[in-house]
Length: 354
Image (tube, rainbow, N blue to C red):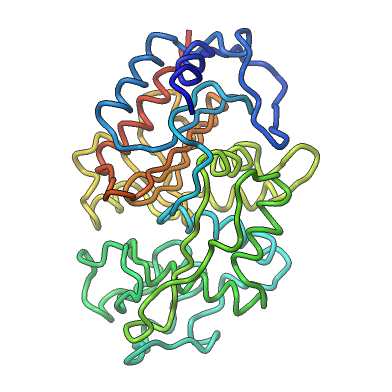
């Protein structure tokens, strides 16, 4: 993207609360001056300077009511989305939970699952619901790292469902269960159920592949590669309760289930104290992070898909806005957790509540 186009985007800010919700076709629509009146131009310019000077983000979009009000970097570039994959999988689960193909009360034992070295009897009582809530109580080693197992209690010491821990073992097993029960490949389902209905511009099925060390755990991870602007489409779908134009892609009831609090921010901070000094509080749903106890009214009901190095989809229902940003890991580019949080906060602050 040219410098000229970025600067042009800075002057598109502000939005009256219009009743209509726009959806992109093959390309995104840029907000008109009328549609962007509540987005503060000086704050937008300061945000742009912050992105350049203080982050390593490679692509970012802010979308209000379906129109682009801010764009930064290369939003078409496809790269690894890290743990945002988990939120995407949660979106796929809904149809199959609702038709009974996946039963959330089935246990690991019911499903006949085991792992390298064996699972403990208490671990085998964990349900699918526990797994997609990060509450399984199974602390077997991950074959694809990326969780917070350094905070894990001893194996067998926790009753499944009673304790939250962000563990890639849970999330990798959630992917296996999805494929076992549906008989379908996760990436094929992303293409059929999300990429095609949403008209994604950059989705490339050939890039998607599983990874992991099966000598440690049988359950592979399902990394995903998306562009920033296609991640923004996922956020817009969530903002609109699973509806895209005239099609209900995900049921509104399942969107509500995904975003229902399964873990409070108090428990999350107690079990994994990495966010204690961040100034924000996260709860947890079905593989989505929930913004809780935030004084800024723009964050009422907000939620995020979050990935390492700087991958993010944040939805702000109170201001009908979606933020998506990516950080391609080339040259070891990465953003600290604090920077990623600041980006989500600063993006919302551009919207003028007055």
